[in-house]
Length: 265
Image 1 (cartoon, rainbow, N blue to C red):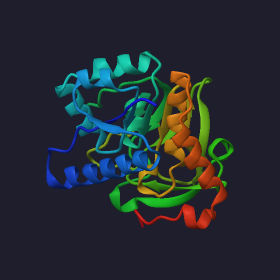
Image 2: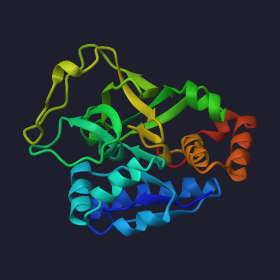
Image 3: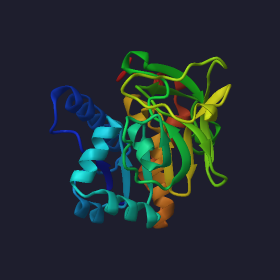
């Protein structure tokens, strides 16, 4: 099993953003450690050469894009994706990986791309409209065992409006047909007609790219991390005994005990 990199761009900025980002980064590292895997922080292009897979975590996507541009990370990130190495984007990271994003702040932001999908930034609303929901995850359950649902933590979350033919939908979320798109004077809403009437997609996979609109690292359920790490194992041609051992233990335990939410409530 190789080293997993976690993109860490916001740690040195203002306390509110840095605090949220550092907590997310800490929980992400903790989730990897639970599976016996080494995670390292990535801030410079050359550091990508030392890792075999990459996680792009949540944060403020516009700020992350500006920092990535400042550090000249976009060419290296795109090359990493094009090499076919596993990359997982959560929340803002999902926006980074999308080929197209709408509902962006005026002027837009640069994207890494690779996932053939259209993502709506802040689809579910502002910070105070964050929520948790049980998501049906048949593919995850098939591969990792455990309950039929996963507790999704949505924090100022995006949603996937449409996907290309090679994209596999792993989870979606039902919404009222009369849902009003989030809008503010600072945000330019585009392509309202692209919004589905009854559900939006919140998790996808395309080749070695994985995207989730929610934050699996903020729960005690490590199945998404195990699922992603096995994508890396497939890429490297080997299977991690540590991942198999943890997954087997998860499947045999009481689901309600194993997958409660001690980290985020």
